[in-house]
Length: 219
Image 1: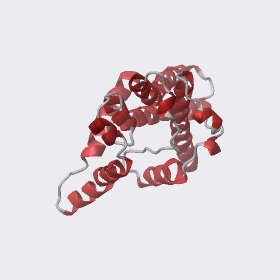
Image 2: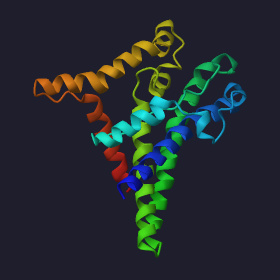
Image 3: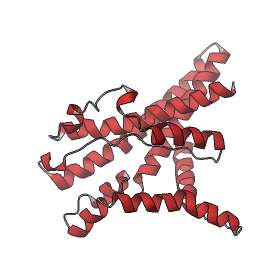
Image 4: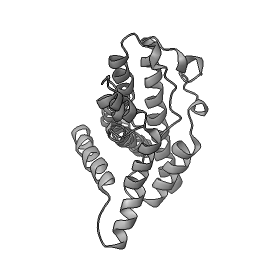
């Protein structure tokens, strides 16, 4: 049962992450950029999207550690912004697509979770209930995680990608610095705080509180 629980947690994470990245590619294609399509990224094949650390190793570590938050990422979908006819608008639309996809999946999963009460076999009902509940939770967590305006997260492009100013473009492209900031916020500060008896898990607090509010609205 413990293994089944892990599987029913891991599969929704995979679906949420892959659908998120595919949504970026689909919207980019509709807006005139077929880079993701040519790269084979508009595919439901998980092997096309897996980043072994972000999609597999990190989520498994977080699940097994039971720290209360699970997230991850896939290989970013390639997007050529120069192919957009309205770059400022289209960058924001493309960046928003992944988050909107996750919110839509969470909404559909919440409806299916409600419908599981009509499944006559209790064992199957329990499995389906756990699966769809995890779909709601993982998609909400991924949406909240990505709305944070730190590059390379989608929030940085949503809030600053449409600003045609050198400082805004420099900020959106500051991937290395953003990853360093995320590492500090997610891992370093909580560990340092634990040494001094302080709760410095600000990043996790924001994600858990915001996600919890949205999850309660759905389930």
